[in-house]
Length: 135
Image (tube, rainbow, N blue to C red; front, side, top):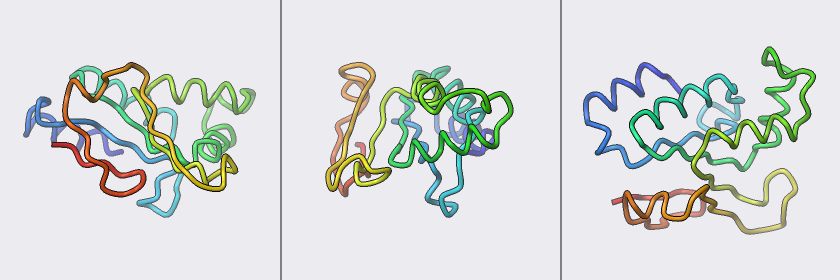
């Protein structure tokens, strides 16, 4: 995620008008490119500075953790478990299709670190699997 554009958006519309910040790992928008741990950490820091929930679409979390392990400084000697534990520590919740990475033959998950994470902010309407509309 472009950190400068994210900060500019928050400054322009006000944090109260940003219901959540959402990162897709691996990033489908740019042909499945991995998201660095440094970027996830930085986005999380900005989100939490303004008390904006930070969510991940994490269908390809294991693949992304492997990319972090093989491409990002400081992770070569860490296990996928250790990397995933750190990755998920930065978010307030995640959505995922469980069909990816061999979890299940169908279905998905919507998980929150704390009960009421989004309830306190907005009503959630499910439009499509793995996509949310908030209002």
